[in-house]
Image 1 (cartoon, one colour):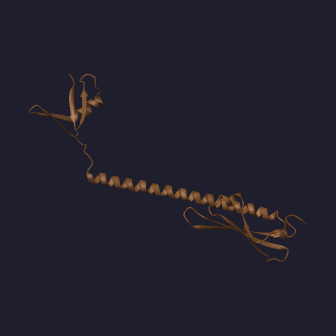
Image 2 (cartoon, one colour):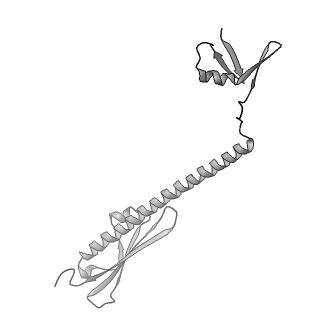
Image 3 (tube, one colour):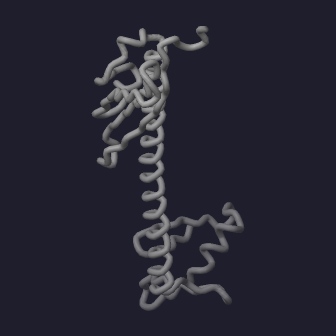
Length: 173
């Protein structure tokens, strides 16, 4: 006949001959106290073993909260940084693409204005401008390209590149 042990609202049935020894050790920690036919169970902690105090639990919860909050901030900032780096790459590629377009364009048709290309279209609120200065004489134009966009964090970021274009062109004598 099985013996029933009750601890709070948990019922355990133990058959004397069929249980494993580790389960028997757990059950043996409960001592049965019969008074007036009522079965009461009390917990006896093994020697050298004690529970955690409320202060220890609160400190552990506080440390875990700080750790998980820190990890959340690190992940959030990491994703923001990755997005900003991707947008910076798009802007540099937009500048390179426009420089190559200007180098293949006829000298007299290079003017001040704006530009758009596939890389610039990937930037949020992306805008490209072309500024020309003829500081080295009538046959050399110094072209400054500027790309600006709004990052995820709300900042306006600007990248620029400068190149020189001659009337003769590249590698022409």
